[in-house]
Image 1 (cartoon, rainbow, N blue to C red):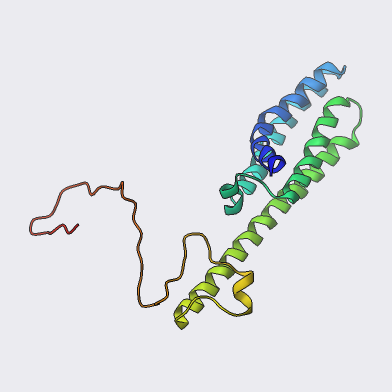
Image 2 (image 1 turned 90 degrees about the vertical axis):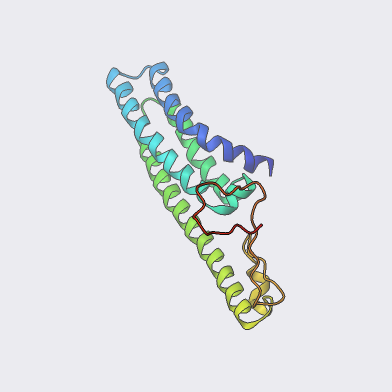
Length: 184
């Protein structure tokens, strides 16, 4: 869990650190002025790509609740970030930036696929819950174990009862209409 939480935080720091490393690496390892300028523009595009992938990972509910990415996310981010760091050390290898872009595109589509799979499983769990609640009971059967209730949706024993939970710290503010009653 520790490694997954470190990567959760690192993915947002990497948006600034890794493009800066490309610029510093190109300056340190005797690149030409044009290569440094190319690293500057490439770093800006890379930073936007890193931000897009990080936000797609962050969009998944389980990632936000656990404050940790999945192990598959860790593997994808490790490969991509290691290639970015390696390309900062090599000034003349023209195949490495191409590989960084290729793995970056794969990471982007992987993040979209993970977001879609997460949303699909949550929707299936919600549909099982709604179906079983409409039938008058808690979810049972073969689909109930693989589709647990989504967070915040606990079925009641009697489906004709709807429970609305409110936070105690919310206050009613604003004007009260004439003739309206406030019931506490």
